Length: 75
Image 1 (tube, rainbow, N blue to C red):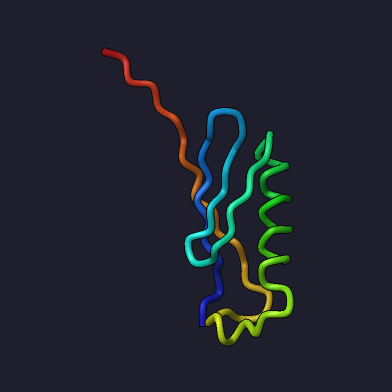
Image 2 (cartoon, helix red, strand yellow):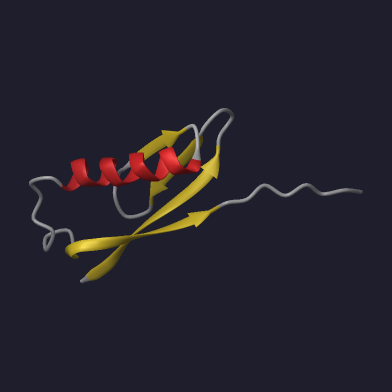
């Protein structure tokens, strides 16, 4: 059983975007704080009424995020 729900966060043109790796959940936020709250809510709504064992998840799984940082390369 999985203890974690993984999400990838990156900066879009205007907003931060989060995409879950194992669930079909995508959300956005103007700030990272807003994005985190939106991600929690989106995952809760996605899992509402679902049998977590059928999704191979433990009750109350943690969320692990991977944050993609922009790098500037100078020549």
